[in-house]
Structure formats: structure tokens, C-alpha cells
Amino acid sequence: MSEKKYSKDHEWIEIDNDIATIGITNHAQESLGDIVFVELPTIGKQVSSNDEVCVIESVKAASDIYTPIDGEIIEVNEKLNDNGALVNEDPENTAWIFKLKIKEPSQFNDLMTLSEYQEFLKTEEK
Amino acid sequence: MPINYEKGILNEHLQVRESAGLFDVSHMGQILIPADEKNIISLSKFIPLDFNKVNFNRCYYSFLLNNNAGIIDDLIISKIQYQQKDFFYIVYNASRKKNDEEIFINHLNNYILLTNNSLIAIQGPNSEKIINFITESKNLFFMQTKTSNFLNKEIIISRTGYTGEDGFEISIPNDVSNQFIEILLENSLIKLCGLGARDSLRIEAGLSLYGNELNEKITPIEASLTWSLHKSRLNDESLNGSKILTNQLNGEIKNLKVGLKSISRTMLRSNTKIYNIDKNQIGYISSGTFSPIMGSSIGIGYINKSEINNKIYILIRNNWEELNIVSLPFIQNRYKRGG
Image (spheres, rainbow over the protein chains, first blue to last red):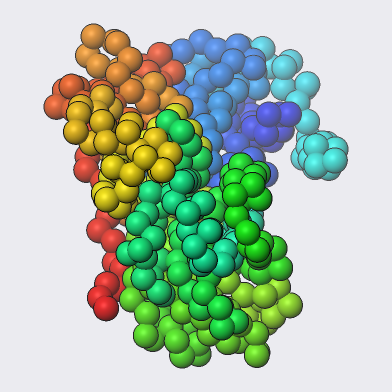
């Protein structure tokens, strides 16, 4: 049974056993605007929470994507190589960005639930 | 004007290339200057045009120049009859209003700042169809202008723009501008477009932006805009910086304005340094965007002339990325020339 949570940097993270799938939220893609390139992370890289792991380039700006938890990058979404715009179209599903083998499962508890994230968005708008 | 409306920059960009877009550019400065002898002498100090050769109902791309021939602003100036009097009509950059208006205030007489006029740009291959309810539009070619009427108010319609497409810019009193825009938007061929698409369209068209390609330390010759200077003025000492311009025209220019194209999937951004193969800086990117027509990132920049046939690089996130130098514009313009 998988579970989905959200970070303050507007990433979503879905956990299935010890594998986490990570992407950016719909709110994040809306504020980035037209996404043209996704520079994917390197498979096999060990990363710690809040590390910059890859970059999304939109017409407006370049944005760093952070990993919300520690782990090893085991898979990247190759579809985004040819089609960065998929992140605009389907950010929270087929346009996942990378998968991690989780190191510290307890870090997942520090992230926000959907309702907490929605509340967080309201405070950010102010 | 927002950066973009709900469909986004790339969608608006293609809307203009394929049909038509409406840009509300009312933030720009507009002024009417009586075309009398005194004002012509004052304007001739700053503007490198031969005012004896400036024709009625023609638009000219030109500049306000400082003492060193640096560009205070770039502008479009036209000679028109407005309310039965002869005027020069100038459209200038919003970002340079303060500097430009200081010159106008100190040097010109009886000018009228058109602060109660909106400026609406219609750009794209379908522009002609959309604006045909203004009958004067049919008699205009590229860089021509006329006054006309809308709801009994005098308007100024020019066949000009900033996208490389056919199109019109209309100066219209604020009290009827909403009705004008509503009529335009009833036509399904045209959609509202924002500043983001305005920027990516003008970069594809190879057009300069003040603050990016142009500033007070760059002359029109250094900005590869020599074509816009009236050469007879370069020997005229009453023109600011005329000696410098003459020397540059007869001598060597150090840097060239070039088109740049990303080879990899790197986005070109303004103020990025450009290097040669020995990792020495030889220039910089002045504008960058993503071109949906080219399917890659493109930009405009300045590079040292001696490096024009060499490989050039930018340093992005600790990687050296090679760029291609290409000629400007990236896409051929589709102006309706003639007349």
C-alpha cells in the first residue's frame, strides 16, 4: 500500500515499501510555467535530504529540485528527456522525476499530508 | 501586462506565429511633439535622423543618444497630422520613461505626453483581417502610420511591431480602449498575449531590447544597428557623439552582436558569460529564451569579433556547454512591405 506526502519545496513523494517516487506538485508546475528541459539526476548517486538533485528549466527560470529524504537514486524518468512539457501536463503521475531507495524511513514522517500541504499553500500565498 | 495568460508563454508565442495575438503595451511612453523648427533642432541633438528627410506617415526606428553616442533609449518616431497639426509621435520604453522625459522636458516646447492613451499591439499573420474595421489599416505598409477614428475619437494606427510578424500598433484614448479591445477579442483568430511571449517572439525575430542588448555604454553601431542611422548626420557636430559614430563606422568594431543556439538541452539566460576554448571570457549572453519554432533554446549575445569562427562555450552548473553562433534573425520576418 503506497502513501503520498509533500515537501515545503513543492515535491511530492510516494512510498512503496523501501522505494520512493518523487516529482513536483501541480502547484509547482503552475508557478514554473512552460517547462522545456528536465536535467535528470545520475543513477547510483547517494543523496541526502534537501540536496539539489536535478534542475528543471522553464521558459521563465531554472529551478533546483531537492530530494525530501536520504537515499540512492535507482531510476530516472527517461520520458522527460525528450518531453519536459510532460511535467506541465501530468506532474503528479506519469511525469515523476526519480526513484530513490530509502535510507531513513522515519524522514517520511516529517513531510506533509495532502491536507497539510494544501494549508501550507494558503500560508505561502499570503 | 502579465508575463502570460492562462495558456502560457509557448502557447501564446505560437498563437502569434500562426494567427494573431493582442498585447496591451500601454505601459510604454507616448509623446506628441509639434514639428516646428525649434523642436527639430532639439531633437536633432539626440536623434540620429535627418529630419529634412523624415516623411509624413512614415515610422523610423531610432534612438536618443548621449554625448558618447551611447543609447539612452531606442524608439519609434513618426511624423503625423494629429488634430490638423503636424507632430512627431514617439513611442519609447517604459523602463526609460524617467530618462527620456527629462530630455523632453528640458529641450522641447509644447509637447503632449499621451498619458491618457492606451497602446494596443496586434501581431501575427491574421492581423490584417482582425483590424479591417479600421479602414485606414488597409492603406498601410510596414513602418507606415495614419490617424483614424474609433467611436469619434482620434487614434494613431501604425503597421509596426516587435515580433517579426505583420501587425499593427494602435494608440487610442483610454475612454474607448476597452470597447476597442472587446471588439478585437470577439474575433476568435486573436488571443491575449503577455510579456513572456513578447520577449521570446522578439528574440526569434532578432530584435533588441533596452537593458539587454542596448544600454548607455553601447552605440547603435556596436549594437549592429548601423542601418538605422541617417549617415548624413554623422558629420554633423550638433548630433551627440557624432565623432564617435564616424570613427566607429570607419574603424574596427571590437564586438559583434550574434544569434546563439543551444546544442545540448541548456537554456540560455541573459548575463551568462561566453568563453573561448582556452576558457577566457570573450563575450556574454544578453537575452535568452526557448524557441518553440526552433525546438531549442536560443539567445542574442555579444562576442569578440576575432572569435566569430571559433568554438564558444558557457559554463552551466560546472559543465562546459558549446553554443552555436547563428545569424540573426532566427526566423525570417513577415512584414507587409511596399509603398
